[in-house]
Image 1 (cartoon, rainbow, N blue to C red):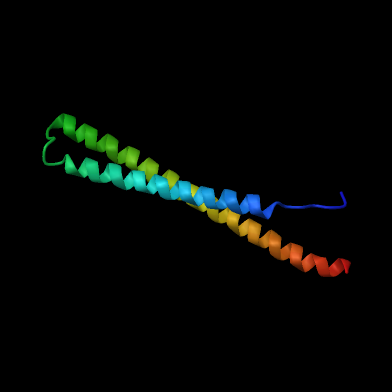
Image 2: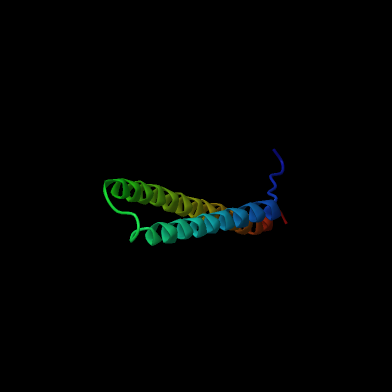
Length: 95
């Protein structure tokens, strides 16, 4: 293995796409949360309680997923930056 290369443009595009998807999930989360809260005055009783509990659980899961994807973006981005720095530093050993 004489040469290891990274396609930084592709990695950067993937990282950016991942961040955008996480942001989109948070937009969906906020939209569903607002719509659910808007029902609170009109939807009452045992069924409403069960519905709102289920919505809360789903919204918690969606929010956690968005945060997890954001964390994934940060790891990919940080790893790419570290690889770029390492590549730049290692070049001096072979000159």
